[in-house]
Amino acid sequence: MKDPGLGLRHQRLLVMPDDGAQAVLDLIDSACDSLLMKQFKLESEQIEQALLRAHQRGVAVQVMLNPHTSGGDRWNDDAFTRLQSNGMAVRWTNEAFPVTHEKSMVVDRRFALIASFNLADKYFTETRDYGVVSQARPVVDQVIAGFESDWHRTFFAPDLSVGLVWSSFHSRGQMARLVDTAKDTLWIQHPKFVDAVMLDRIISARERGVAVRVLCGGKHGISDWDIYDTFSSLRVMERFGVKVRRQKHLKLHAKLIVVDGATAQSGSMNIDRSAFDVRRELGIETDAPHVVKRLKATFEADWLQSGKYHAPDPLDPSLHEQGELPPDPHFVHD
Image 1 (cartoon, rainbow, N blue to C red):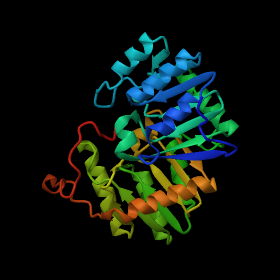
Image 2 (image 1 turned 45 degrees about the vertical axis):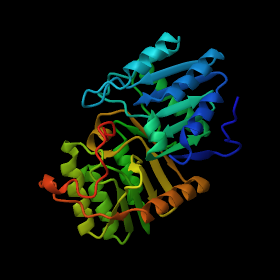
Image 3 (image 1 turned 60 degrees about the horizontal axis):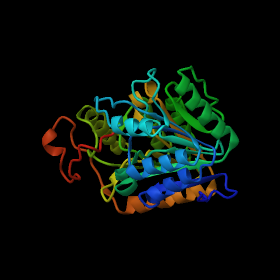
């Protein structure tokens, strides 16, 4: 078995594509007793093989996969069939949510991974993404409770005091309260801006003197429907003095907020009404110094490699493709 390298640290950070698939494979290969996985998209043969290895050495593997995207794409049918045919316990995610966008894993009831990345090779090689591995007992227990509630189709009422950020019902308020605490700096690395409440909170931070940086991905991966809100929100933020840049050296899939260089939030939820109100999503807040330090360093490196961005008029499609990465039909911010 491989040691996932947690040691005595409370949390550690995975950064994609820097750490790559091997970081996740090491976590799976460390499992001795049990492995719980809830995933929006599983399209990596090497991850599936790691799950099979775990199953073959006697680990109780339970996997929940999201059945279809909001647009109807069924990415996980093949993975579901393969896992099931190999004897693993696999179910579709809870029908109470039209989409389960959560990306989580619990190994041996000992540590939990809460990530922004899907388990597909693209997200290990081409996208900026983050994952936090936590050994904190309240965090691990709550990710397990959320998994078991969705597995058994029962209602789940999370304890919001442990540092996890859950959708639906709670995440908008949790994210807004974090932004409201900013006194000096607010760094946001998100692809979508489709929520008036969060737009108001970000502008309010700027109005009270907070230096706000927004690192977006431009149009890349944004649906035609979400372009209107995202471009308009970016334009409004810029008018209020928010510094906006577009990331292009990597596809931006991360969901990150860093407040005053001391506290951060990352996870599966976009700044998006449906992510807050109707989907199953999971994020985590952290003030672990070594985690925040690496998040800041990664954001700063991405910021330096990005360019100033003025979002085009959302009603003028002729301007939408200027300077954009080539379209990728398999990279969509659902």
